Image (cartoon, rainbow, N blue to C red; front, side, top):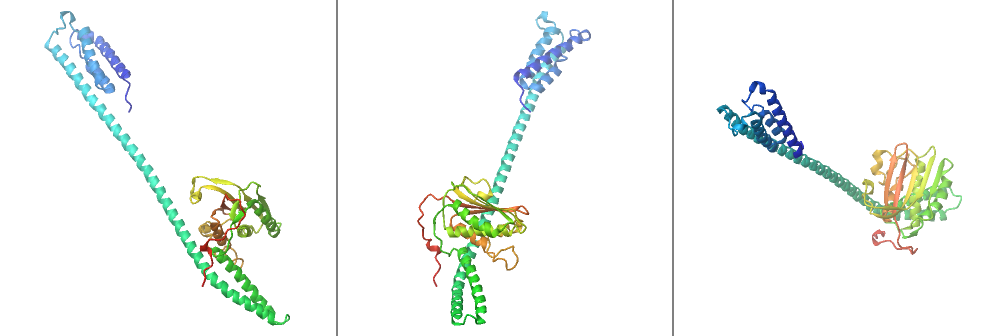
Length: 404
């Protein structure tokens, strides 16, 4: 309900006065000079209903004077003829004022109720906004807690894997050393040479697994140097094209203006080869493997996937395949060690876990998008290097292999 403009309210009042006088003129043949204020009350009620106190009093005063002037005995000095006329006059004034006041109170009550209703509506909207914000904050808090627990779990598993791998590596060195001594002490054509060769191959595979565990646990030596990511993926891409075969269409996209990054060249090749190998395994019937390097500036977080990325300049490495995709139930666990979807004996399940650990050592971030039967895309964000020097840096002390 909106407040009416004053001119409209008083315009309605003037129309009511005209209608009142016109009706009284129609009734003039039957009433004569008696009851000049008979039609005043309906006009007051209508004008006061729409306009309130002001228009109601306006009709009361102007309508009474007009009715008295037109239908009363004016030449005798506005003296009414009978007591009934006095009663009608007083009733018109008192009734008009009373009706105007009552409608004024009614209108004020309606406006007050509308104001309270607007306040309640505004408070409800504010409450809804606050509830949504609190729910969003609660969801973000749960997500942060989940990521923190996951990070702590991965850190604990990494420390355990590194410690176990260190001891296991020492045992493998003893086995391999004794195998070499046994091979040199026996004739080349001895039957035992075949058994020793099998033992040596198994020990070497165990040593490779140990090296991956050491890298995953952060106990592997890495050196930091300025790396041209564009040149690196072109070099590795030629090797991938050879062992991937004709069933895989390899596309390498990289310009010469890619920002340099600080990392270990050998470990970067390990990361890229591991991602490419997983992509090829996901396309047993063939498909397209795309390796791309680009520049990207990350601003303030705009979604859940950028919430943990520090704003800054990055050189993202993208590895995209058109394979079968990763099941949704495994998306949260793909970087766990020994988790694999391959057949038994086809892999140790350390490729992604090792790559994830190495990326974190290079202060990078990983984002994964996958859709069933549509393919998987890995986005690896490496911070842009601001120091163009190629001088290698020693690893921090906390990555040294613990001494027994």
